[in-house]
Length: 510
Image: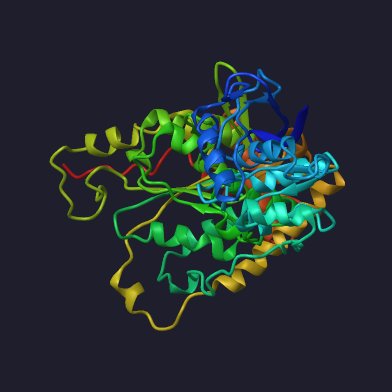
């Protein structure tokens, strides 16, 4: 007799069904797992053996064969422990054979029979719901699974024996409830930033249209301070965005106690991050920082200190909104629709261009430092601004600047305009930065004076096709902030002033 249990294998955030087939039959005493298992799955034999013993059961003195079908699909992770254990229990009659037919099962077993949380429970719950099945998962992951469907049958036991008692009818497991993460009440506020009015204006524009922003200035000018306050003016995640973000976080094992949050991700990796850490990859093709920042912000501080090859690997995700990880035997795609915010010093010593500063290396200090950033990478950044050092007058000025709450209201209104506009075109696009080139040419068509100005500017600055469309997107956002239907000459002029043709180049004093 062969007992069957359904579990899942993950490819990106997609959960593929896997049939766990268990046969207990005559032959030499052995416990074999086949079907392309990795090291973690192979080691499940000892965890399952110990967990069954702790639960008052024992493996029969027979040949136990476990097949993970389809056999040509690689199986990775410790979440196969529970389905293998339940398959064995069904095969030896410890639980009713048909009790598991309506469930997808995943969970890691401890040696004492307790269930440990595993990554990917939310995508697994979504996959189970699509198959018309319920889900069995560890108790600590139950709240995460409950978000998949309010009507879905979910069992979240703490131990193997608790689940067996549920199927026997001696103990009833209640359905877990979805939970939200309790956020800290106070986000950093823009009102704390002294001076830097131009930079705050650029930050508002970037938030309103989802544009990429690069800030260049000396150490201590407030670049990181400004970037850390961007989440305080961004709108909360919409339901579909929340689901996408949570599925990626679930795959990375970053959902604390299965709690979800509607706050947009803000990821700030160190400049020593590798390509696999930033874009994704590794042994199991895990999501990288660019995917963990999906529908949120990726902040790269000290931008030229990143490995140039690592930065250039961001070019494709910035353009397509996806991070593709190719392997010899499979290809994994993670969503990566991000807003890139970057900060850098004008040179290695950081003070090029400041009055009275003398650099021993001369102009080479700035030119060589900024040359670490490639032209194609910079072409994907919409706003490039200079952030000068704050003066003493700004620091001692009385009163506070405009609060994040006031700026957030304008950002929310501009995003509402954009969402309604692109819905009329039948697009899922939510911001101007994501709009297709053909659509943006229609919605950002300038008046006669603006058209003439744009033609002259495109020729003067030798804008690339990508640069031309990004100027249009930026101008459209400026018009949305002003509540205007038509893009004017002033919007185009301001968009061009932010875009520039290169980084702010500060000539070091020789």
